[in-house]
Amino acid sequence: MSHQVAIVILNWRSSHETIECLDSLRALTHDRWHAFVVDNEATVESRQALAPEVGERVTYIESPINRGYTGGCNLGLQHALKGGADFIWLLNNDAVVDPLCLSVLLSAADQHPQAAVFSPLVRYFDAPDRLQFCGAVIDRLAEEVLYPDSLTQFLDWQEKVPERVVVWGTAMFIRAGLAREIGGLDDRLFAYWEDTDYCVRTQLHGQRCRLVPDTAILHRTAVPGTGMRPRPPHFFYYMVRNESLFWARHGQRPGGRLSARVRLLGKAVGERTRCLRLQPGQTAVADACLHGLWHAWLGITGPYVPGHRPMPALMLRLLSALPWRLQRWLATR
Image (cartoon, rainbow, N blue to C red; front, top):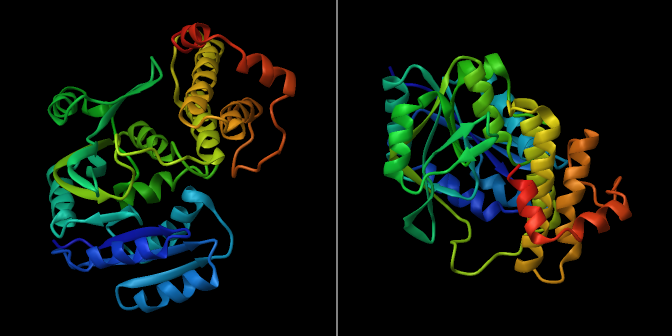
């Protein structure tokens, strides 16, 4: 049986990368696919750039507002499910795929009916011999996501604890039946941690996630050791806030949420300190870590709005002054 695959690609201020991603899709050996390009916070320039791509294989979906990664993907997912697809491929627009990638993913899905979410390996575009992602497993008791030292180590984990495997959203390949049953990405998160959340929801639904090591996509992102790309405040805000929201929902740490909050407090303060070391003088960027934690405690979700209900100034000063050793001690509680 030849499966129909809907590919959801989110564009946000990077039409040239989206076009290169689409160009790589046109070389796929599996030809039953259709791409849904969601233009998040569309502009005149993005509409004009993407217009020539629209056709028999590509549908353009305009969003006048920034729905975030979750909302943008969910918009594309809704259109994809209406089209009767068998599988949904959430693919980063800064990814380039190998011609055989989709065929290998479909073969893996046929061979592993107990799994409903799959991912290829993720390699660096500028260093294809280096792996950016080769699988992970989750420990909900310790409230940790564990990354392997090598692909060999991960494949051993996948063999021994397949029910704990989680994958990234860079190229997340999903059975459409699962998406119809558990829905899309968690819109509360807006961006980051939504992929791990989806994997755990899949597991709670009685199905598994699986890494497919026989194929890979190339991801345009900074290669470690080749210079750091400065991160904006919203990146740190979402990473800290959403990790706290994630574990509040899925964590099973002994000692209850107070113990977990202490550990996440230590991690957030430590992340602020690390941020200042990497980006000296960028206090606003570093403080976004603590504002994200504060918003998680308050239950504030959705997009990052600078200046909205910030952590009280006295609390911010006190936490920022914590000695490094104390930060480390809190983070390991």
